[in-house]
Length: 197
Length: 205
Image 1 (spheres, rainbow over the protein chains, first blue to last red):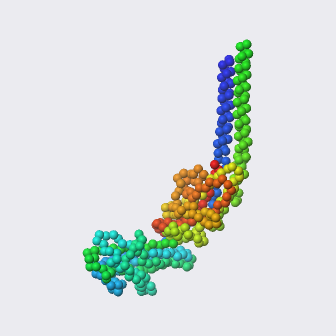
Image 2: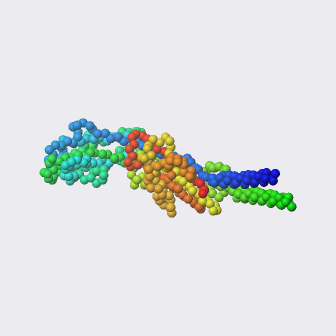
Image 3: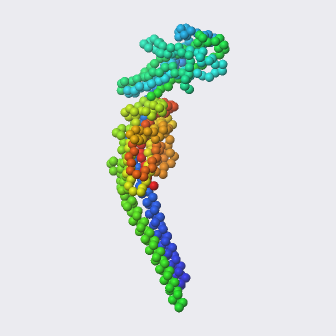
């Protein structure tokens, strides 16, 4: 009888302690997240791209392919029939200005002619006639993009969508001061255009 | 005699049980009293000015009239992006924290991307400045949008980008300026868009 009473009291005591511990734990857990703050902005931050397209004339007669090239004066080089034509076009929605850079980048080849033996020259079509926008210069790349030939921009001052076109003509030749040892060598260039803000 | 000893022992045990129970209840009462002030304030809702208060802590978020809105975005260098200053090219906002007593607070500024954005995260750069002594200084360098994979401890949701984490233990007002642009190396074909909202998440610790 005494033993049973003892067990009963022990059980009651343990239950009491357990119950109080549970309550304290519940309060502690509840107060852990007392203060949290969340606000969602009512303003959106958005950027939208337009489009700028670039196209090259793909006719085989409009690429530079010079065999048995000889050192050439600037006067002859500027008028040679071997040239590369390309066209830049841009579609602009709304008033906006898009700037672009035209770079000439060398393509690495075996037996390449030295940069300082190559002259490059760029023209732009204005009113149906090609005019120089970069006079003959020795090929001199200054960045990993190559040599900057020319900078310009397309601009739209209306609220409607417009398409703009610009035609360019690129020539290159061996500088007249070049050593004859450049024979049996070659030189390749590609034209890249970068639009930027 | 023996019966007397047994009843004395029983009495002792009962007394002990009662004392333990009283002690436990006292602890319970003290806990409830000390924490009841904060628990009562937890249920307060946000009012129209985006603020919440527990009595010891309050936060307030205000923002400029318009967010960033850039059309015909082009790949932009970090040097140019950091200096954008035209209308619609940056977003200003302020976070005010009022703290009374021995309490401290963490808050996170997070950019949450709109699900309809079509430009890749890797093509977007964000840049954050804070106004210090009257002029804006960089607090987050130009960084590609980098979402977190799980919800942060402070509350920034998974998929958002944490721009800055701040610890506060006294009242302050912090002015921030956000800029966003198309990364210099981005290759975007055609008309696409990218939209974020700047949210703030705070928590006491």
